Each structure stands twice: as C-alpha cells, then as structure tokens.
Length: 282
Image (cartoon, rainbow, N blue to C red; front, side, top):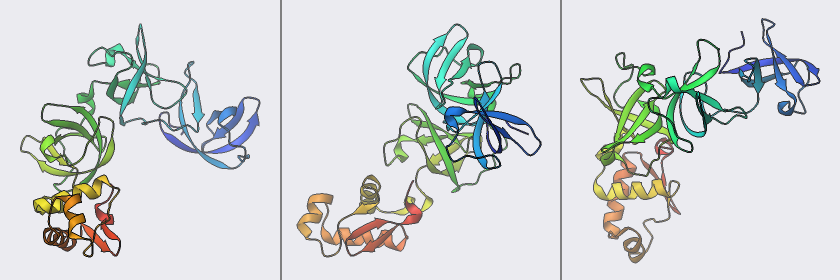
C-alpha cells in the first residue's frame, strides 16, 4: 500500500508523457512527475520517493525531501495567509496548509511555528497543526534517565527552551544547562536528565559524564565544542600561549585535560586535543 505523507520505495513501471508511473508490491500506482524523474531511472528500477496529494487530492510522488513527514513535528515558516488558513514552507513545491481550526493562535506571514504533521480526516491531505498538546504523549513516558534522544528545539521560555523529544514527548532545556547557543528549529542529540514525578522531562545537551567535570575542564569542553572538536594546545605549548587563549596556567590546563581524558571525553594527539567521538555532535 502506498502511504501518503511518508517515504515509499516503489518500482518504476512505465514512462508516460508526464513522467514515470511507480507501483508498489500490490500494484497500486502513483505518478512521479517528469521533472523529478532521474535520468538513469528505468522500468523495473526501484526508487525511494515521498508521496503526498496534489491540489486535486490525487497522490503524487516527489524526490524532494520535506522538512518533516507524517507523524513528526517541525519548525516551519508561514509563506502566505489565506481565508481558510496559512501555508507553510515544508521543503516541497506545494506548501503545507495549517487550517485555522488547527492553529493554537492565528498565524502570521513570515513567522515561524512549531507544528505537527497529520492527515486531514475529511480530505486525506497532509496538514499542519500548532495545537501540539493533543499529539504529545504525557502519561506513558517510555524513556529512562541518561538516555540519548533526538531533540527538535522549540520556542524559548523564561527559563529555557521547550523541545520535542523523539517526535513524541515534550521536554525542557534550562538556560543554566546550556553550554552553547541553540535556536528554535535546531535538531540535535540530547539526553534525558530527569523525569519528574509529574512526568515532566528535564533535558541536557550533554551526556551524563559532563556533569562531573571541574570548571576549568568545563571551559575546555566549551571551546572544543565551539571549534569543531579541536583545540590546538598540548603539553609542549608555551605557557604564555595557554594563558592567552584560556586564561589559565599550563599546570591547570594539563590537570583539566587529564581529568577529561580519564573520563574518555577527549583524546590527546601530538597537534592538540580532540573531543572524543562518543562526545561529538551533541
């Protein structure tokens, strides 16, 4: 069965004037318009495509990749406001409609909103909703403290940033726990810090080991994370250079690096210090 709002791996069946007809194992077909047909695609080849509905509610395939698929959350910008809703840019030629009935507050052109993607029950079209609470799991929290998760950063609050966890839960990143700048719409790895008795989830961008480093080691970690995981200082660097770059003595620098190395947060090479692979990409 060809699934609307998702990626489908289909087989090229035949060329027609308007493109390539693709079929699934059950014989259901969908058109891949000519402008999206790769030159090398031949009948009987398989191809992964995203399937949605056109303006006449017919399924259509594309090789474009949307910013989110059915059942996911996304941070999208309003391109146009019309009498029946707002159209959002989700990365496809056809914009995504957020009907007024699915807006938590009236959307404005040019502004960005955190939305959930679903199928409209009446039309079968993909639509967006900013009424997020009805799509978030708040009772059955199938997470564990210290677990690595995927985060979508949401709007800023007075105490931090809301974030969507694994496209299923809501969590909070406190400002006091942020070691680098984040923006609404960022997608990154994070960690479950605490699941509170009221089932609210506190998050961290750092793996648990980071919580136990002393302040000078913390400073070095921040520099590593801001410089793509590399710091060009080592035990043969001049004390003056270390002091100028880190505002700490060479002795303090070596002690901090040693502490990070013991926790397997960095590796030490001849040309400098590298963030360990298990710590990168946070």
